[in-house]
Picture 1 (cartoon, helix red, strand yellow):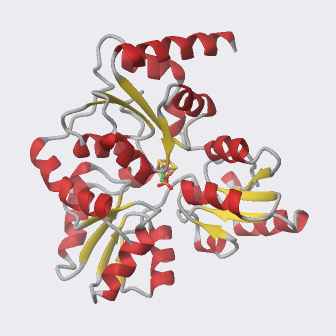
Picture 2 (cartoon, rainbow, N blue to C red; picture 1 turned 90 degrees about the vertical axis):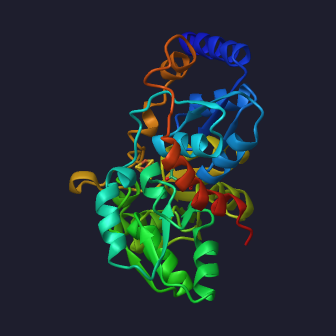
Length: 321
Ligand code: 13P
Ligand code: SF4
């Protein structure tokens, strides 16, 4: 406790001294989100993080999240110093979509519009026509589909299938998955729903279709948090990374939030949905990013790649549905 407090105080001081702002994703540990709030920083979904970082006047932005979020911040704001608690924090979707393999996949569909999820490397984004996050993927694909375009989607197959089902768009899909959301199990979720028949089910669309089908609300982290406030239920079963409970509980202290079951090793597991890479963003790592050598913390993106990736990223940032 007191050690945590000491870290927080030192980090707040360092942020001021360095004219730096801390931006955290909803999946980071609770103390990191609290620190972002207390220090005048920001917590958001991946699209909001990108927009906030680009519009904030600080010279240095600390991105507490995973690698693609730091890279996106750098691509949108090359003049800023972008630091991360650790550059090792990657994402299974990014890891599962290697740039040369992606190029070969893309070459098979030359007449398709290439839409990639933000959870990819700068090199993959550089090969795309559009970048989207889960908060606007539906709107963007709807827009492209109404314009008669065929879509190549990568890398998350669950989000892709959800969008294809909702929009009816013609989509070819890369077969990637998020190791956290892929573990949610529909049968165990239905059992839990029987136990709590009054609970509304909130699901992130990186989850399997059988889980999404049970949802009362599907959406990005911010959209799920909004649903937890807007729906009249007092109890919720939530299928996404458990970092999200920090904000849900803070905004609705009177409501009860229950973790949806996952199925690691065949056994039903509760309280297991937490991204191992998001979990690398500890207080110690945040302090280290702010002191001394920035190696291992500072994000760099090759200039040519940056210019190419900026085009589809700007389409996302400027898209109005
Ligand atoms: P959101 O865009 O919904 O915040 O989530 C993206 C994600 O999976 C980050 O890991
Ligand atoms: Fe990637 Fe899943 Fe972790 Fe998000 S939760 S960073 S999609 S592995």
